[in-house]
Amino acid sequence: MNETFDVIVAGAGPVGLMLACELRLGGAEVLVVERLTEPDMTIKAGGINVPTAQAFYRRGMLPDLREQQNATLQRIRAAGLFPNAGNQRLPMAGHFAGIVLRTDEIDFGDPVFADLGPSADVVLVPQQAIEAILAQRATGLGIEVRRGVELTEFDDDDTGVTVQLGDNSVRTDWLVGCDGGRSTVRKLAEFDFPGLDPEITGHQAVVDMTGAEGLRPGWNTTESGIYTNGPTPGRIVTMELDGPPSDRTTPVTAAELQASLRAVSGVPVEITAVHSATRFTDNTRQVTEYRKGRVLLAGDAAHVHSPLGGQGLNLGIGDAVNLGWKLAAVVRGNASQALLDTYTAERHPVGAWVLEWTRAQVALMRLDQRSKALREVMTDLLATRDGSTAIFKRISGVLHRYDLGGGHDLIGAVAPDLELSDGSRLGAHFADGRAILLDLADSAELRTIAAPWSDQVRVVTAKPVAPRDLSAMLIRPDGYVAWAADSGERDGLAEALRRWFGDKS
Image 1 (cartoon, rainbow, N blue to C red):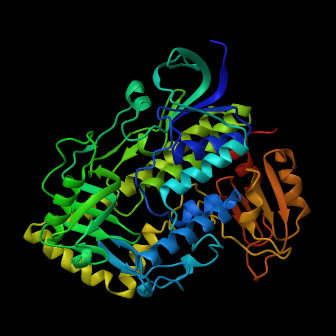
Image 2 (image 1 turned 30 degrees about the vertical axis):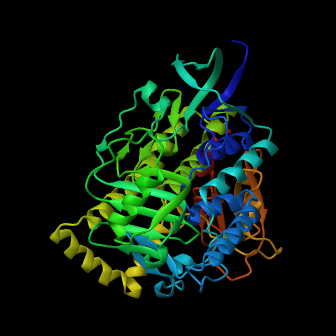
Image 3 (image 1 turned 90 degrees about the vertical axis):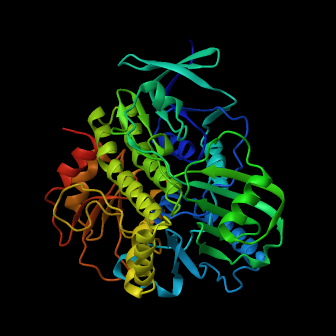
């Protein structure tokens, strides 16, 4: 056992790679291990929400996202199902239990959509593209990713973790399981994982088919379930509500997909080829704590739910962005392990919310008369501007915030992406992974207070292009505001710096 690392990340999907990149940016030595020998190209999430796009933007990866979105839009136009697809937005802004939210019914003039910056319209990026972007970034940061390596056991002895990787034993200070809903790390560490058993069978696939002229584009509710057609060529989703699949491990066949699509749509399509396919259910579970000793969980390893609303990828990226800078600070000795307690405190409520919203959507999809009546009510509500906007604000992620205490409205929220007088935007200043003290009042006193933390907190002094009452913000590496002041105040800044970046006295 000669090899040692600060952190071993189990799982090289988007969550594991994002976490590894954040850890490396924070100065940690990271090893990523992955059971699969090649990236999993099975069709998964088809888009991202605003916080995910903002996280990539802060690290300089927005151009990569935009390139992938443009390619997706080209495929959508080629399919011809949505001929009015614009440069950035589709006619549908999302859905709730298959009830479509129309883009032209969303009030984008709502104040919560202000100051989101250039990342706000970058949403049509599939999960495979996200993983490819992060894999390239990990390579650029010098992160070692070992594929075809299975983690079989580990021992947390309170001073570190000995991890068995195939025939090799490796030592690490910390182990993070980002290894999916059937997480080996979660099972071996015996995390409590309560929740509800599944009651639906879902399929998602990319296929070739004939006789599809009778399939309506987008989300469709029928007497037998729900199906989608598009928006990219050959993409289908079916959901049947008569129980979970009897077997989730065997390959999905063309016959299985054809039977499901015919049953739900009533259209006699013939599926002639399957390019990618997966089953899913509405199994909903969440660990009670995201950390046990020196073992932590992120992404689907910490929470599983149905893919309704496309929240899974976004939830996992949020976990990685929240945990990465904190664990790196602990590794470097800039913070005590108490900082890691804030990971569960901040991320568990977000995960719990996602589980509740996916459960609610399944309830609206049921085929009994009472559920159908409730669905009619929700359909009428979501046909209104206020109803559509209210739901979209939640599923787009723009309302996400943490309870960090403090008296300013911005504390706990994502920092507004202000346009600054030097021609930059605030979000562009986070590329090196450090926190930012944004000094809008040119205050020497604030800069003096922050000076002891200069290795972790960079001061940006500039004026906002648009007049603001705001005079200063302390923004964590993950983009969330830790302290803010409206009029040259300094009270609370030193306390916030100590809380998040260690005591320098």
